Image 1 (cartoon, rainbow, N blue to C red):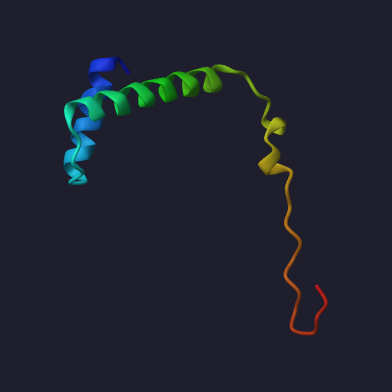
Image 2: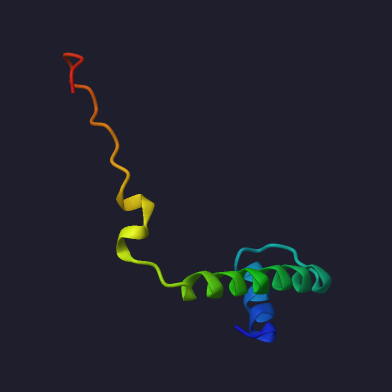
Length: 70
């Protein structure tokens, strides 16, 4: 997203949420959001194998039954 589109996005969302946001604040928010978009682009460009996702490895313990045993 280019800087002009990011600023327009910030202003539209502030208006939709009825948040008071002056021009200077909107510029700052857009700058931070632009940096976040850049980080996301770098992270999503990095190739990962399907088995590299740790959330797929985690398995929570089962809840204990009424008798106190899983």
